Every structure is written in structure tokens, then in C-alpha cells.
Image 1 (tube, chains in turn red, cyan):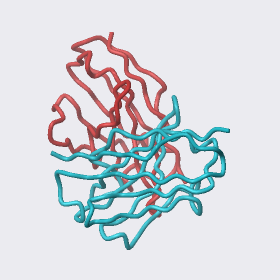
Image 2 (cartoon, chains in turn purple, red; image 1 turned 135 degrees about the vertical axis):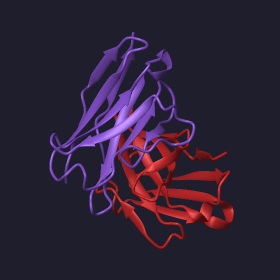
Image 3 (spheres, chains in turn red, brown; image 1 turned 30 degrees about the horizontal axis):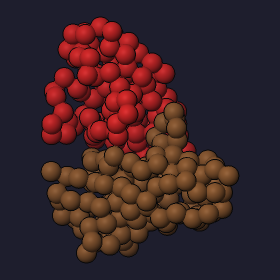
Length: 111
Length: 118
């Protein structure tokens, strides 16, 4: 099976743009879709990106997702950062056997 | 509006059993696959199990295979997780979630805490 590696933490100022990476250890990042989940402190996760770059209803378009086959990674970009964006973010994909893989999570601090 | 409400968590001793439930509302329950995902205290997310719309197909993470059983009752809009031979490393908040058309979730419940301790 493969692993998804995320930076442990990132920080940025309000109003700025931040990008969180998610690197796949083996197999192509493009072979299966990548999702991103936001988990604010004390809350359950919320889906913010699905199928690499699709935005669920109710999620602001400040959130966007992409994949880069050259680095075999996916990215979550949040523009116009707000303090409410401070949370843990997890990427997730799956293998051909329907086994899911989560990244270890990235703590976003908006300061 | 989609709502998923888990229940059944609690404190149990190693080797004991527990059954979790998740009641769904706000959507046509039998039109979707469903999942359980857990999160150990202070740790990341771990997928546990999923089941297709009619209960005909289920899959499990290696860490729970043979000990946990997922099921559903579409007449009651309910999802279940029967957990046997519980171990300390099963201690976690268990979330139920609705499947997308790919192996992923679009809606999550608020979670129920399972603590396995002697």
C-alpha cells in the first residue's frame, strides 16, 4: 500500500494564501482521486475538496484543490485566509482494493 | 439537510464487545454507501469500514478485520458497527460518514467515543 505525507504544520497571516501539500509514496497521484477534510478543534471533520478539485456546496471558493504528477502530490490552497480557517487538514485517497489512506494531517495556524 | 448521529460509545474492558449506531436523516439513506472512520485521541483519521447501499458488500481495514462487522437497516435509516474482542488501541472517536461515488465521504457525524481500558 502507499502513504500520503503532509507537512506537520503551516502558518500564515490573515488575508494571505497558503498551500498544503500531500505527497503519495508510490503509484501515481492521478490514479485515484484525492479528497481534503477540514477538522476544527473539537469538531468532526468536514469535506472541503473531493475528486481532486471539486468544491462541495457550502464551501467557499477560497478553497481549491489540484494535483501535480511531476511531484506526485496533491495540494490544497486556501486564499484570503480567515481566522476561522485555523484547523487540521487531512488528505485522503484509496487504492484499487478500496482501502482508504489518510495523510497524517497538517495543522494550519492563522496568525 | 443531511444529519448523521452516532451513539453507543462508552467505556469497556479489553476483550469486551460494543455496538455503535448511526441514524441518518435528510437524504434517501438506501441510495448511499456508508462508512465508519475513527480517530484515536490526539491522532489522525483512520478508515475502519464501509458498506454499500443494500448491505451486499462490505470492506474493512486490516486492523479490524475479523473483529468488527458493519451492517445497515435501510428501513430504520440506520448504520451499525458491531465491535468484538476490543483492544486498547481501538480507543477512539468513531465517526459515521456518507459515501461519495468514489471511496470518500461527503458528510460526517459528530462522533461517539469508545474507550477500551482495564
